[in-house]
Image 1 (cartoon, rainbow, N blue to C red):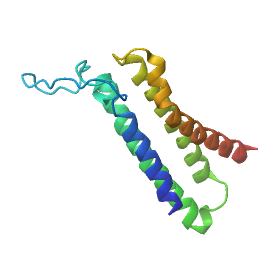
Image 2 (image 1 turned 180 degrees about the horizontal axis):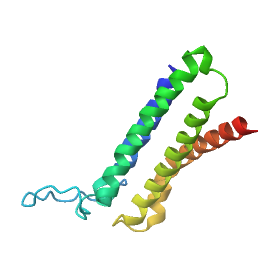
Image 3 (image 1 turned 120 degrees about the vertical axis):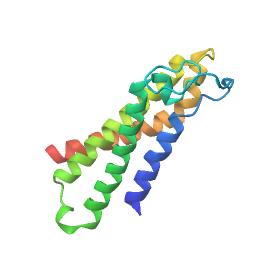
Length: 150
């Protein structure tokens, strides 16, 4: 259950970073243009992954795959006795946690940067609890990596 809770926590973060900042006005839908995931969609809210174009599309799905991978590696490490030592499975999981946490922090800061709302410090202030929580995940992952190699 702990392995699942770690996966669900990162899944929550993934959903949270795709929301618009609190108080940002909604954008009107465009009905006359066909959907194209290769271009930047400047009409989407600042938290929308397609606002970053193809890079956002790839990053969103890569992060989802990494979150699933973190959950699977956590399950392997906790349930199978031969993987319960600090080995390759634990190292891979820790590296993935650091990468996912760092990318999610950068996405939140990117949301604040491209938002049309002013002042930006208010947006960052609203994001501060989640950023703080992601920094804990980042620190735990860095600590796990340090423990494995030293």
